[in-house]
Image (cartoon, rainbow, N blue to C red; front, side, top):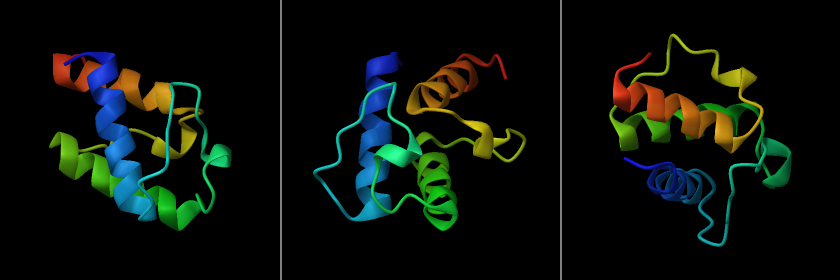
Length: 83
């Protein structure tokens, strides 16, 4: 799975989390760039990510992700078996 494929899937997770299909992201997107992204939305987003990618992020401090790119990197490592 490529970084671009993961990015597209994360965008879909954000659409589901915020009920907004107009959200567009890049690796540099942060929570501050998305209207309504607060701590509760973050939890819902992470749950959507776990479901979409069929992974568990419970051992990873997801509140420390600085950008979408950080999430892409972690997911690439998980899919490669490096985490």
